[in-house]
Length: 133
Image (cartoon, rainbow, N blue to C red; front, side):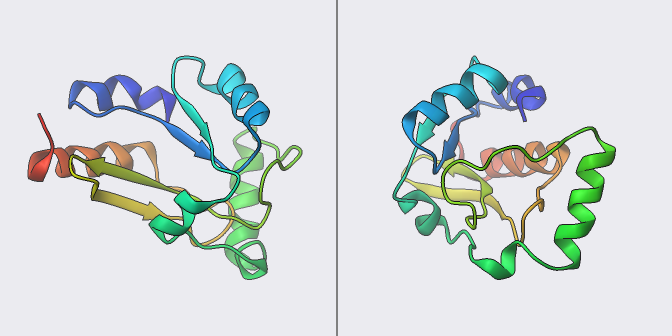
């Protein structure tokens, strides 16, 4: 996502990350992956519950997970130590003024992520419909 930061900012959006790990893990993630973006720690996962994010054993097993793992491996990515809630899936949410959801993508299983182009297009459409552009 950090590669899309310029595109997102050009349409008036800001990029931020929320994880379920402790604050020190949020800082480490920020320092390693997105040093110029805010990263928040939500150990209670209240943010995840609010957006309807999925979780549980069924989200870490099955053909979709295997396909995603192979795709990640081919792309040079490797799972490292899990921090936070290992069964919690995430998503991408574009928030608009007034705490309105303009666009969202909730991961169905581990490794299910929207493409960067999908996120930028979703953010652009949300901003056009009700953002502050």
